Length: 148
Image 1 (spheres, rainbow, N blue to C red):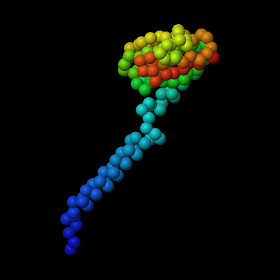
Image 2: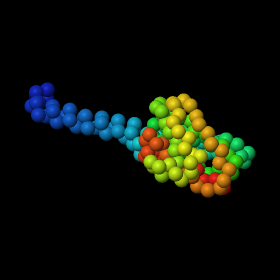
Image 3: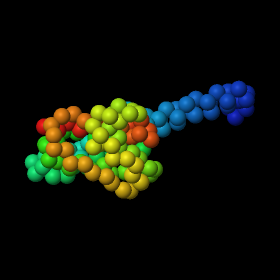
Image 4: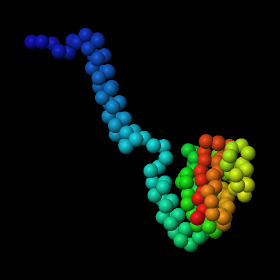
């Protein structure tokens, strides 16, 4: 009879390596590769859009959220007379300032300044146009408001 329990050490290392690669691949496939790994929740836009549609009908208030990854939604279209509120959900102090960085000269009323985590700031847009803004403290975070 053959004794199968006495394998050379290199075979055991190879077996454990193959098992490890298979487990790693399974974890990656099931947890990280769901149509592309994305740090932002896929439902963010869906949750905001019904609010946008209703607010645009009434010319009321629309919210933009400052998250750790930036503004959500990035681009927004509203009717004249709509108030846009930026709510800071980033966990750190944020800022809303008009483009371009660092001069903030494109639309001075949009230079709303700093706002702490959990707080909000607002501006009513009465004049049609496209207004670009950014987080002065993290300039790569930017967005735009188009007023019709």
